[in-house]
Amino acid sequence: MRVERRAPLARRYRLLVPVGRGGTGTVWHAYDETLDREVAIKEVRLPASLTPRERRMLCRRLIDEARATAALRHPGVVAVHDVVVEDGRPWVVMEYLKARSLHRLLSEDGPVPPARAAEIGAAVLSVLRAAHAAGILHRDVKPSNVLLCDDGRVLLTDFGLAVPLHRGREVVDTIVAGVEGSPAYLPPERVRGHPGVPASDLWSLGATLYAAVEGVPPFLRCHALASMLAVLLGDCRPPRRAGALGPVITALLREDPAERPHPAVLAATLERIAGSGASRFASRAMVPYARRGLLRRRRPRASRAGAVTGVAALAGMVVVLGMWSARWNSVGQSDALLLTPAPDATDRTVTYHGPGYRVDVPADWRRSHHGGVVVWDDPDSTRELRIARVTGDALVGLEAAEREAGRDRTYPGYRRLRLEAAPHLAPGAAEWEYVWTGPRGERDGAHGLRSRTAGYEITFHAPDERWTPGQRLYDRVLSTLRPEHDS
Image 1: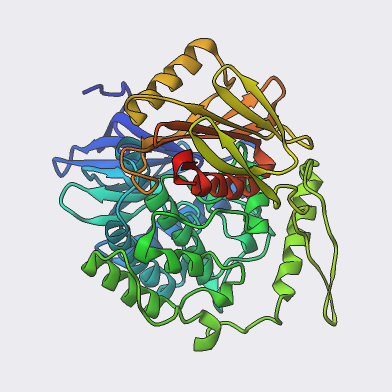
Image 2: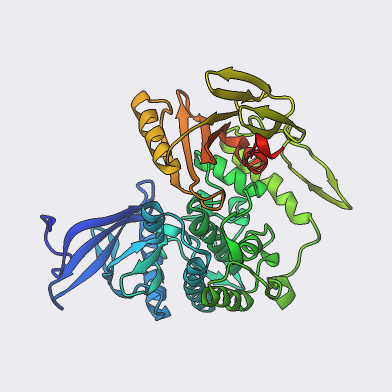
């Protein structure tokens, strides 16, 4: 075990090795020499741009947050033992846990079954309900902040972005105001710059549950701005592996906080799914906050106007609309405007009869042949669809294709999202999803999905901003692929 060469903090805590780093600081494995025990210590990183007065105020706020977290006394919250101020900044001393995060589990083992995801979700929800009752909003619920302990406990950690609530809404701190958190897990109201509410944490829980069963976040894109735009547009593919959890996730990801499930109903539903392990779901509807009188219901559709405000705010940072087109429509008697993607030219399909198969493909895409590969290109963008015959084990074949792409540097800036068996497609099927960047970096962000099923490899590539409509097209193609002798 490597020991850091520095004097113990507060003449008591000796730093050993860093075990995690994030946007708000570094977590250390450390040793409490006074009580002879292992501890974890969060080293808080303060922005260099702060004035001395702002640093003092932020340190005070962080200490208050640590005190509030310690006061929760919930089995799903990491215990806070102490706060030490050294070098002008706070160091938070917490219990040391043998655990791995949900993010790491998904990266190493792949998606979890719906019943297990529901069990994890119920545990996280229990923490959130306790925090909300104590007047604390977490604001950073995501898989990397969900710990799965060796002893079976599920904990929600890192209240580093937590803020107090006043009359059900977050108190905005002018020192740290702005959009904070992981873009793919930020609820739409916070992307727009509005104060968070307890239902904001529930939206992030929904995105976390989606990632747990699907293996990837619902709104993940090549860069942060594209992810936030996808959140504003509600642009994600419905969960395909969620089983009993599907309606719950859909309800949690509703745009209007008042329409998200009430925590009490949500808790009962998650516990029922976790206990049954069933893949079929028959339960009472998710009762939204507004119907329990916790939030005032907005006028119908008026909340969609926030998408325009949010997009305008994002565009103020950089012009990102690119290949999206805005259609501005009047909404009833209000001044609200609606931003929608341009109509997809792939709505109309034709049946193509290939060598040993038939499939429905976009009617106006250009077809070409490259050896044994049939390629369709979208004339209006860089989207591309490929189908080829393959042999052998599907998962092994995709792993080999990934290695070959790495050797040939086919995808600059390549990052794997998932490569796994896909029994939901067919027995023995596999899928590989990835992103990459071109020579101009994030401006060339692209997304790829490759499936091997029934002796065929189907590949789809699309620019990042067109990815979700592309996924819907891809799903249609997969669902219509049939051996020719079935016709």
